[in-house]
Image 1 (tube, rainbow, N blue to C red):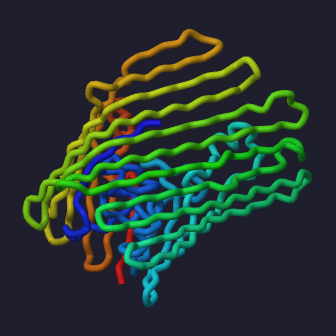
Image 2: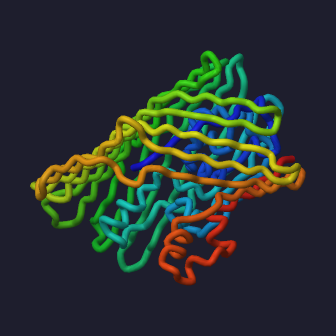
Image 3: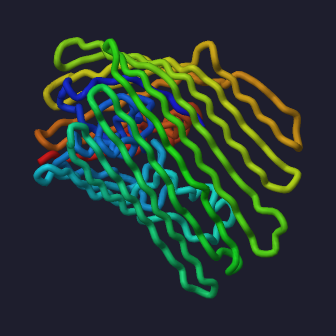
Length: 375
């Protein structure tokens, strides 16, 4: 798993695009699902539920394809609404696919019912410190010749207290029963996402830990294949202001990612990546109706990829092609904002091949489109 992080402006720098969406996260090479570790953005409610107290009174839609495994080049359709009500704030979000496990689930057996149609509920308030709670739920069935079902639920907790923020996100259950045979079963482990950030001397320092895993039990099989993944991020970031409508930023983060697959009793494969990416970027209001942003990221000093397998030779190499540039834009129409991440791998590959896929059309120029309205 590969991640790059970037610093961006805080809530005090409330420009025409200060509250944005997945498209903005893509342009800054951040986690489009969980949001930023240090950037004020609507996506942050999925990392720290306490942010429901500052991100309120808006409705948003993420344009895409229903049922897709979300990515910058193949976004999933989702969206929700967030409001304030007296001393409390609440939200309703539809279609989130964070940690849905469907790649491993259907990879084990495509006949399993997927984790789909997720419902997420948020509530938060301020009791001397901001607090927030998120509940998510999914339940799906297929009652054909083989009865199949899937159920999942999870919990998110967060606080914001002065310069300190802390969060915990737990995937408590995700299970599918019935696939090629009625007794087939796919079960996710307890999913964890824990972290904290602290603002000190004009910088934000942060740490974040994530862990997922699953097991596949097929009827009659003597062995149960498993997958697991861990992700550790520790870093710091700083923003430099250039007036009210422009800023530059930089971040450095130590990342340690590890995945392990046990496909048979005597077959295990493991991939470990250790990197230290530095990211530089900017965001500026070009006009009253257009904001442009971009970033460049590349690992320095630490940049290793190690693969181990019981069936092949262990290798340790440097990750290649790690310099990444991303860009995005926001069109501002008063309270209505349209965010887009500019350019896709598909478009670049098409141009390199000299084929029609390289034509600069709207669908491959704006690889992700997010629309939000503030009321």
